[in-house]
Length: 438
Image 1 (cartoon, one colour):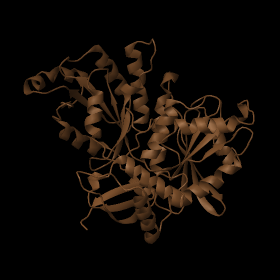
Image 2 (cartoon, helix red, strand yellow):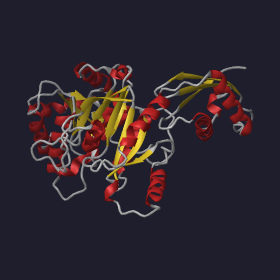
Image 3 (tube, rainbow, N blue to C red):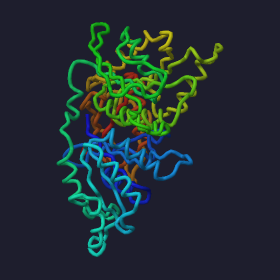
């Protein structure tokens, strides 16, 4: 699993600016559907020598009447629990405040590395005035300007030295299929895992957040080896506010780093929430195979058209996942749970599927003849050759004369033609374009 770095601090000190600076600009092809491209308060940082998951705690503030200080305290406690390293950001222009002292007192209670970052230090004269922050009782400060990039390299050198070792993406290797059960607290993840296993492997309780850590359990189905990963809900200690349940996303992200197939569990009574979209969008971006599992189906009043209407609503909401199978179950009664592993088996096979080069080029040739790409800068875009370069997920490279002349909409058209020809149920597809002369 990738280590987690959390950014904490009061509002307006530049946490989000630092978050964006460290995250950098993504250049991956993403769908322009709601639920994929959105403002986020977490992200995978891959620009440096060691990848890590970055969390901006400012995005987790609940819309409530609680005082700002209470909100900050709760965020800081959650960061203490979930993060491997904490960046405590303060405002170098405004100076040391009582709120900063409050958060610093909390951070001293945890046995995790904390880097004290003084932001908005754009000039030497500002840096000369940050001595008051040593009143926090720390040995070193990290003056930076997140907006202008000043001091970021030195800060990252320290961050990378402090991060714990991680296995990285090689954890995806192996014969077993790793199946992560993800979703919001109290949607029935642990009950579903118990049903799949046939015994009480994990504690299932109506109280949200019962699961404290991700729990791995081996499973054999049709002679295939699987590893079930039951992800934790929010981890609570003391009196952490229950309104901050979005921190359960962190556990799902950690689990997805190790998973091949993800079961996104949705509460049939409550319907789809923003958090469901967030988690599913991350699974899509990570290139994980994905199945939508609608749990608590026994609690929904039905007629002969209920399932059809619900399915259409899910397709409209998860527009970026038209390929994801949908399974309606009740973990409580066991209704249709037996169907899940059959779907997982098929999706895992598609996730690892390779297409012969000749068949692949035939489909691409037919697609480009049926609907030629638009003219780019007065010249026609020519497709020369296609090949599959990877699985998990299936990844294809197309050689063309002008890679920058193929719009995203046309790339999506090609992906849809590949799906029409070969299926690929449950798995995202990756398409890369390369320039090549005739």
